[in-house]
Image (cartoon, rainbow, N blue to C red; front, side, top):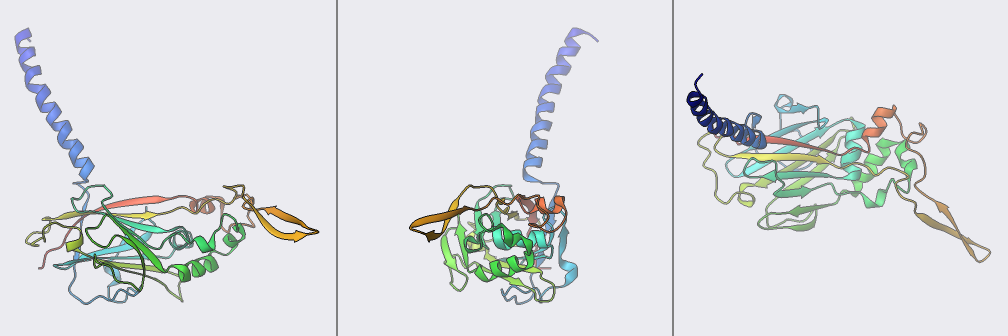
Length: 280
């Protein structure tokens, strides 16, 4: 091959190569090849921590997050329902806290946040590691404490609320705990007016992609602090004890095998790129 031919090839190849790299990078950033579809919402939904309005087959099993989820919409509202049954996952959701991140451009970027349930400060496991001996009881108590939620990044309504209060963003949240199975059911509705500048027309399925992230907090490890608490006064002197010092690999402290126990102390974030459904 002549030198002039080689130089001509290089001049042609390099711009094409860089274009391909840029296109591939953008596709990966936006998860363009991993878009799931929402389901058109054609019924009235009550946000009550129950999934009775939906068909079981509509839920998607997500192994990474450890629960099943359903995302649906009508012409004005996004609806998300989550069902979790694993004791490790449900304990983290109710005791350590759970968040949903939203992005109206279909990017893995935290633009709007719903924090609910919030971390259960009243039922702290760092200073009371014996609570981890009975995860079912820990779940129930934390469920009873799940009374507040927080909104961040929305056009209107940012702030801390009681679940009985309305907010200016029009967002509703609820969590339920099934008596017979111990499953946690999470529900929320999010008006499109709170996250879109212009209302989608829903003429095509991929007209508007949104990104949804399920974020589960980790429980703090017992022994992660060295706090002392005063437990009484004897002979004019206060007595104290060290708290949060029970090791996490003590079988009497946390049920299950070692790998399962460690999952209590692991956080997770699972992003989904969703194409909003159009009316069929």
